[in-house]
Length: 387
Ligand code: PLP
Image (tube, rainbow, N blue to C red; front, side, top):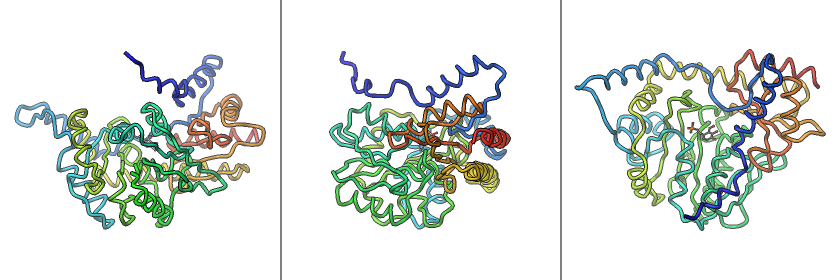
């Protein structure tokens, strides 16, 4: 047996594990401390009643011989795939075939698994900073990585790579910077991919947070994108499904990869839970939509509260307008981890060190709007005492 030695290139600990280790160490020394968690990007609002009701009904069906179900189709039930097209793509003028929609257990696994469609010799361009899954799964596969720095200097809009990138991960709005690519920027990436025969893996996990009309919700709003882009979406952040687990991935036939992905899924994925798919379908009902909109409004207001509070204290902040994340420059004399420690030890606040998302994230921390409102208010009060 030969171990996959590429794993040795991974950071020792997954970012959020390291944060937990430091938070736990602090809690052991200060058992009475009330830690204010503004770090992890996990939803906090309960699911709307219509979605809970749909799950109850689905469970009930499984309890009776007449309505019981076993394995479903690997690519998802047609009723959910068609609803996704009708509700999420047709209204934007995007024409998709039902065979191009694959229901998943969420974006995380597909984002890594999709790279199985490409030879290990294919290099991959990744936003720096970005969600760690792209980098980690590319390292595990032993790929050459081209970082695409997103910095204050370039307005967090990455430049096109000078060398040919075979695979390009784009995330819009980006986690952790909370920044976006406008229509003209995304157009340049689609043109680059068409010219260079690259594939864009477009992570739209935060699409529901977009407010700016000049920011596309889907890459397929850009002409020609169906030839060069796979789009990965999730109900996690839009509908609060981080525990339920459901998402979908669009693999257009024009990419030449659709049949390969179906083949891969049939072998390695036995389908998304029936209960989760019924829950996902309920997100598109009028009551489901109302409940989701209320939760999204809550997070968006929390994002404004955090950004406004930090700006009032003199911090330099980005994001938060089209995303649930606020990207905050650390004060002079600190780096990402030392400011994280400073906030933990002086204010008992947990944020996320920007450098954990890539080298270009050094000197920043991320605050998450998926936080309890009272905790956010208290955190801002405590931070005022240290400025
Ligand atoms: N993509 C991005 C950018 C994320 O931030 C996350 C989770 O935080 C995911 C994908 C994974 O989402 P899911 O819960 O659908 O696996």
